[in-house]
Image (cartoon, rainbow, N blue to C red):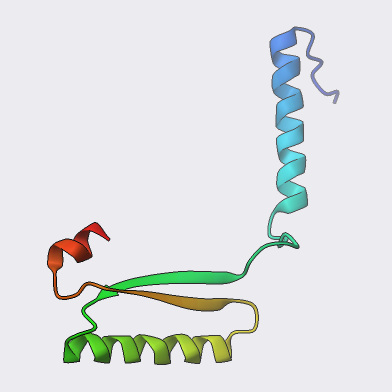
Length: 93
């Protein structure tokens, strides 16, 4: 069984593209890039002036700390913004 031979430029270009794309997928699939940052940012907008907001912040901090202590290859970073009790400010943030 022989491989098909492409003679027109469009199919040659397409076959070259498919070969390069397949090579790229084989080389880099599942391999971490050396300069990659393994920190995952998590954002939360809460009212830090209320009791519920303070409890939410504390709960999220505990959860992030537990995850970071248990995980060796990924880390979480919690980014909290204060809504100041204004729903419109929280919505636009």
